[in-house]
Length: 93
Image (cartoon, rainbow, N blue to C red; front, side, top):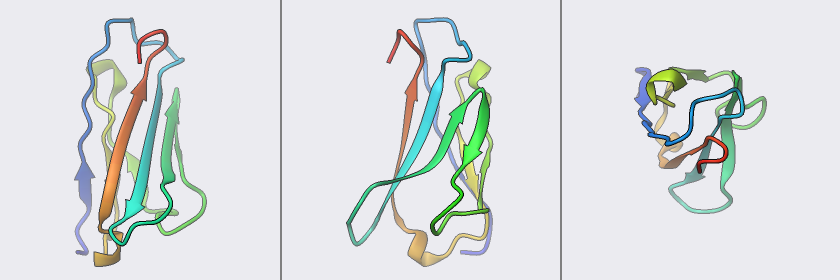
């Protein structure tokens, strides 16, 4: 709580990394409920503009190195839940 947290995500792809590579981070609260997309990356980072993570997520990855990590500023206990990193590098999924 209170200290920036790094959510690590690494990937390997059999296809060359291009600007078509997509990274999506989704989140489901510990109590359950709807999955929500909290971060999207395609060529440039697109943090969420709504919801509890608005203005608190930053890109910490480097797709050229197989890294799709993000950082969350000022985490609180209610942020607890399931975070899923999904990487698509067409035609490789």
